Length: 142
Image (cartoon, rainbow, N blue to C red; front, side, top):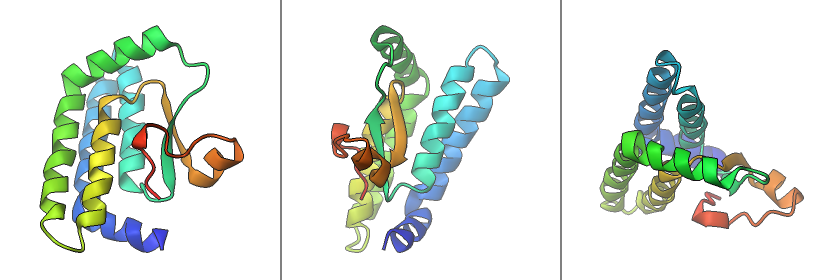
């Protein structure tokens, strides 16, 4: 079922937003100083490209002040625009009956687009095996 959900997801907005994350990552790598932002953009591009069956969880041992500073800069530079892209896609998907689950996924990814630092993406099974709450931060896309 996840395969069908992910394939439909690509058609209903996932591919376009994943490309937006990819472009943001490329620009970040070109500017060299912003490579950590590029890493986060590529992480979110992967998550946006194939979200069902994966979850974003808080990374243990992540430096809270550094993550917070990174998230603030991220939001100001690209996070707000990528999050707005998810909100627009959510609205467009919510108009149709078949798109409602995808609209919910876009809303969850809009939140993930705002705070990528200090989080990691993993499969739901791996998160459960590690004893992590898979609904942490509302980012579960099962």
